[in-house]
Structure formats: structure tokens, C-alpha cells
Length: 333
Image 1 (cartoon, rainbow, N blue to C red):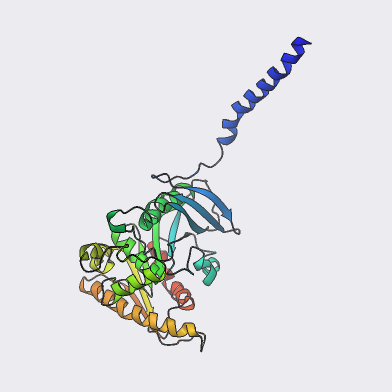
Image 2: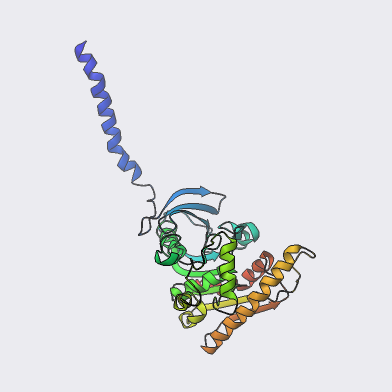
């Protein structure tokens, strides 16, 4: 009886040891978790449908988690070693905009169903301005540029098949973001598209509007983004694509905007049309000034001032379709 009491624990221990020995072999075939250089990693992956994946990323750059939506192409399989051209789509301001906006408000999922490219749509915050915030010299979070251009980029390239043929496009605040990233990281994107943006952040009235938008979204400390627009002018210039247009040389550019008048895609009589008209009119004058700077530097661009149209998603879907050949060419497809 004494011996039998000892045999059962020994047998159980042998079973546990054997199981432990087998675990590494079982896990060896599992796709490794993609991790960025700073430790950012996917902590939750949600499949929305056959093509749509949502990634929740633990982000040191943001000091919290950040979301990314990916549309995968036909034939894509996670971890199969194949790489794909990649299109980054950036959303605009403000609280109503996020990583889901492109799929919520446009037909991007249907439009790209037969396109051989990954589509990556990261969150950019309510008014993150696609920048690492100055925070009065303390820097730290939120660092949106680092989140997008280091963490997200490395994660999708290391774990989700994103290759080195890239294009980037954005609307409104995202139009600024597309041009800012293209000028800050020259050569990274083969094509850049900006829809209805205030790209020149130092044009008359734009610094004040930017600061007021920050306040409207709950960031009440003046200058927390890039400092004071006047006493810290060099910092604003460093974040202004209009002062760095030479960095765009060699990229295929598409720049579009409506004129703010009610157009065929607007809902007649809607209060949103009046707001959209005002915003688009401001975007048009700013975009025209940016295009002038490109011309002064002899930098070619496809410019699409399509006339009547307000600051709204139906026009951004329309102009996204029109820009596709340039974006595709920049990705080599």
C-alpha cells in the first residue's frame, strides 16, 4: 500500500513532464507575434469578415493601445512569407473619425476587393495631427508619428505581409498627415494623395484654426502640439510639408479639393452642407497655395480641383477612385 501511494504522483509527474516537452514542438509552427523595435505588439486580433482584420496594438508611443484596420487582398495568408504592396489610408479630424472611418463611410472594401494590395487604416486620434507632440519639451505620449511610422509599419511588415512598395493617402487632417509623412520620410512612399487638406499649416489663419480645433477636442493647453506658432516658428516649419516640398521629389503626387459650393453628392438643405462648404473653401485656398509651392520647385503633381463639392465623405470616395491609378502606380501594381 505504501508503494502504490507513491506510484500515482510519480506517474502524474511523468505525464506533466512529457506534455511540457511537447509544448515547444506544438508551438513551433504557430506564427510569431509581430513586435516593433520599441516593444509595441498586437494584443488582440479580431477578424471582422473574410478580408477585414482589426488589430489592437499595445503602444509605448501612445502610452495606451491603438487600433488598426487591415483589408487583405485575395490570396493573402498570415505568416506565409509572401509580401504585398501596401496602401496606408489616413482619416481626418475629429471625434467622429477613427480607424473604421474609411470602411464605414466609403466603398473602399468593395473597391479594393480585386486589388493586389494590403490596405492599412490606423487610428490617428481625435486631432493627433500625425505628429509626436511637443508637450512643452516633455515629449512623450501621444507620439502619433512614432506609432504610425515605426510601430504600425514594423508590425504589418513583420507579421502581416506588408512589403516595401507603399503608397499613402488621406483626407482633411489625414491629407496633411500623408504629405507630412512623405516629406519626413522621403522615399518611403511611391505615391501620395491628399484630399481636401490644409497642408500648409503656416498659411494665414491656419495656426489659429489648428489651435482652436485642439481646444474643441479637449486639449486646452496652448501650444501642446508644436509649441507657439510665432515664438517657436522653426518647430512649426519642421512640421509643415509646405516648407519641405523638395522632399516630395520622385514621388507620384495626387492633390484634390472641391470649391465649397453645394455639389451633386451633397444632401440638399442639410446643415452639414453649410459646415462642409466653409471647410472646403478653406481647404481649397490652402491647397492652391501648396500646389503653387510645388510648381515653384518644378515638382510634378496631378491636381484635381473638381469644382462643386463640400468637405464630406461622398467626395472623398469619389476622388479616392480617381486617384487610384496614381496610388497603384506608386505601389508598382
